[in-house]
Image (cartoon, rainbow, N blue to C red; front, side):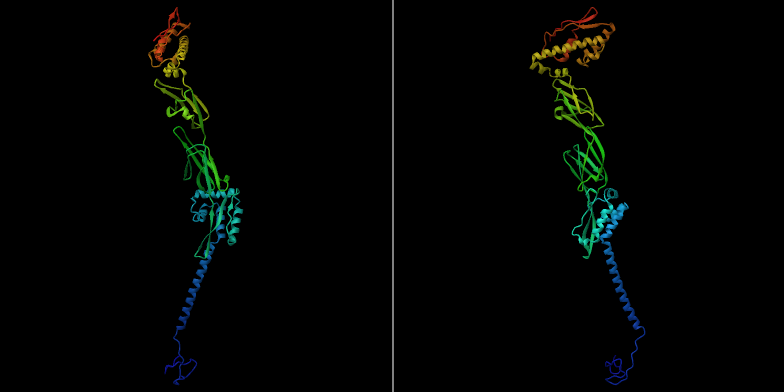
Length: 438
């Protein structure tokens, strides 16, 4: 303290000033000054302790949050309790390439519980998480078939201090093929066209589980669709190869005119039987109608319609040989006169024989294939058959002979001439020698 008289510094234990000799009076501190100092000290001490506690709390919170053992425990809890929401909360942010939905999370949980030893995989994960520094690389845990499910992974350090860990889910690859070209497949929101039946197509990566896949094929002549259940338990090395077989068949088509156009359900295909060789695919549970049509400058003919199902493997579309010869009459005459004459004779013999049978049995359908249904002879013949039946007339074919043929004769004119050659005698019509000259 200082002397109140001269201002020199005086020790607080001295009663008199050593400079001026003045008596020194002890200085009394103001009331409350020491208390304020104590309060300030304790306040600063409290703030320091609070900060220290906060730092310690944050340290333990972050250490606990990034503790890999805690992460493994929470995952095990979600799997055992079949809790899809907890599973997504744990894994979604660290596995952004996986399309997480509650649906595929449920499938994944069910798969783990059915296809893996849950106790064993989490015991292995817990072992690695307990002493993570002992591992240069963590080992994935697998299902019973050796497919990888999870692996513990080191992340970046938080604030450069706290080592982060996360659990990476290892998805499965799905590869699909089919027995048909241009098959569309759909799984959830994933769609793919399998263009070639000889190739395999990668549909993407999926969490293993039970999925429904729909395969659809559509063409001008068939529509097929079938649902398949994918079984990822058959996957190997995290890849499932699946063969989507649709119930389809092909029909082998042949004909006595390979250049004829094929018609399906009355609609032309624009292709010949020779070009198509086989037709399909068609649904095994459906039926279609096939026929063929052939045309040249002399006209158009067609086969009977044949109904085929998926159970049929072969079909023969046959043209009437007589109709074929009629279309190619000019070629036959030009190329082979002897064959032409023989064909005329054969035709006449068949025609006359069928005519007699038609009269005697009263059945117009016997002679009908030889006639032009729109011609006048067809109508007259129907009336004539009714007449001979009502009169009880019977006819016999005695003999016939072709004496002359004009090469330019047309088949319908030829048939008309033949019909005029019948001669009735004594209640029985007898066919005598026929001479055709045009």
